[in-house]
Length: 266
Image 1 (cartoon, one colour):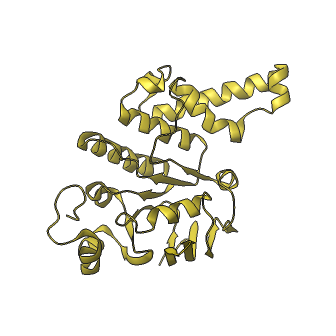
Image 2 (spheres, rainbow, N blue to C red):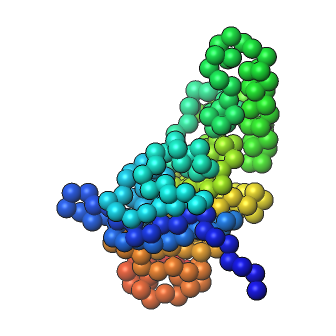
Image 3 (cartoon, rainbow, N blue to C red):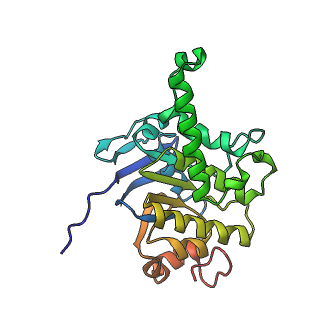
């Protein structure tokens, strides 16, 4: 029997209190290498709070987070990024007046960019580094089918392509963990289906461990290998999409009886 790989991310007894509100209460979960996992729950369930604590935007009241064997419980976002975490945001955060290629290169500069002084002085090493960054950015755009958009202004792109540019910028940093925060927010059904296919393809081709926070149950059930369900700040259920679809506690507490449409379980 093959050995189970050690978790890339481990969350132990994670709790968060905002004044008198207990947003998270002792949540545990793990992500193993190469998994595509969905973190789901109703509005106000605590999933976004958990997501923001993992990435370092918020600090937990108690609990522990381990990433790639390191304790990152109180690490800042930039420190987590340097270790191999990359995230997208529910609200797209791109430089709309800059070309697509420049937006993607931003994701590479922190890791591979030349130092300040060589850049200012125009030294050959800085020019070579810039050329390598541009080449790598074009490679990532190629993976996402955006090579032809490289010189287009980001603000001129359709919303779905802007999301893909954000993915490209995150992937350009060569992460070991990709965290996607409601990537289909504001999308129509066609854009949602297309983006879901893109996420699944990228995971299959690149093997990047991915944590997806998402409301669209059809997309989540269709692409995720495993689901973590949070309700009222606590872990409600965990399992494959089929197991979650048949979990009566999830149906009652989160999905509800007889619900239809994009938020329905099946």
